[in-house]
Image 1: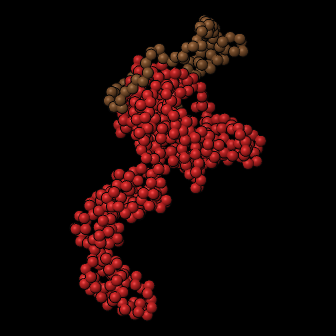
Image 2: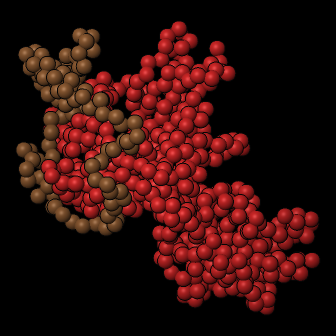
Image 3: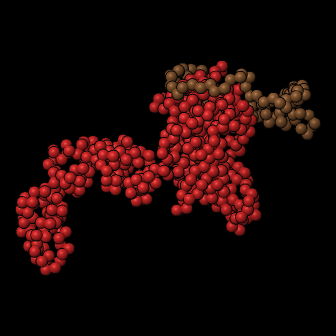
Length: 99
Length: 478
């Protein structure tokens, strides 16, 4: 936050890298402005008194939803692979990921 | 300067459930790659995970057995990273609110008892499996199988309480044994059901604060754990003694060269951006369920070892060997139930049975000689029907064929010779054939008695009753 804003251009670049988004310099600058506008707007939430409110991670008032440990066959490997751009011997094929 | 080594282990144990953590796909993989997948574990759009109750129960059983606390309220979190074997782009795990807090494991290293504290045990899903390049086909490609994706794991995190590579190994061995007793994990390290990461740091002896640590990933055998930590200790000592400082990093163990190497930074972009998993509701474990799980905890190895010594009067060594595997201890007890002479049963189980099991790579419950068969064999020796020597050969035969001892005895005419007139006749023939040895014995070479026993056993194909042979020989060799 060296430039005094909520999110810096470096942080936007870092988030883009983690999300595997390739941004050019223009996009990076534009998105930094837009994200700062959004975050500044959201800052208003800090004015709500929340001292006596339990943290909420879920919108439903629901706990403990389980399934029994039972197996069911859903897809064959043929169906699982049907949308893959490339397959080989029932594997998904991707560019080599280790040297 | 003298340094002290500080080690904490993170162990991933695959839970023994039939289905995956958040979907109904099977967890056993005899099938083709990607044959045990569904829209949930493939991470297709629009699907929702639903938690497997049994996975929660097995983790609770583990935590309670190791004196941990089941967190009354806990929830799942998303750990975000990109890798081709993680189709959703995040792993569902637990972060700030694990299912189990605290706990401990007692171990013994070189006769000294130690208690290792546990920080936590949490539930998470496994990722898939990748095969790289020429190991399958094209060197420029990687190949992904998602059968393993979504299989339930529990991660057991120890406190930094271990002080040597030997202690780390002993901890892992003990943990594996306890998990097997609890029937929550099969403990197979080669197949990846039990995997270990080690956090290692050094500090000057007497220092309170921890030094900078490195994390060594994916240690898949007891030997590797010990070797990797021993190497890493030496490496860090060299760095510190040459005035350098240890860099906090993730390292991989190269088992072929027995060294640890830094992971390339590309693989190490640790910024997981955990946040609460919105697709799953929180857990509030009812006290009744906790009580029920507590009741289901079986006798654990330490208690069983003590009982084997007190109840069966076994030497501590025997008790150690027998309880090392739950299946072996069960086999022993099932046999003692039928043939209540524990030390004799223990000798056969630790000797003949263990030898055959190792040769055949069987676990005790796969042995063709069942506890019933072994007990029958021991009864045949006990009532004098067969000799101990014949019994040894018969055991091998029984192991090979799975047949009952009575059938083998009847078919091969192995009944022990206890007819004193018939035996007397055989012994007289033996003595007649060996006049020189007879003269020698009479001249004072009493050791030759063993020779005559041997010859008599040979002449009867091992069927002679040894006690009777001894008595008769002494009568016939004045």
